[in-house]
Length: 79
Image (cartoon, rainbow, N blue to C red):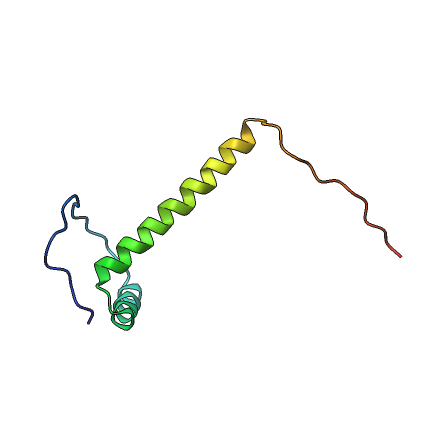
């Protein structure tokens, strides 16, 4: 089992998440291999998820605003 964090970092709050048994086992094995706590792995995963989706939604919003952007055009020649 991976090491667990016992001290609470400043500016953090606790959250409980229910995971399927196989997901938890994979997380614990990965944390052990990476020499991190499961909490550190979860924190990184959530941070990456948030960053990716915020970027995606920012791009979608920009496209929806009909802002000027280059449009590629061309013709494909076929033999």
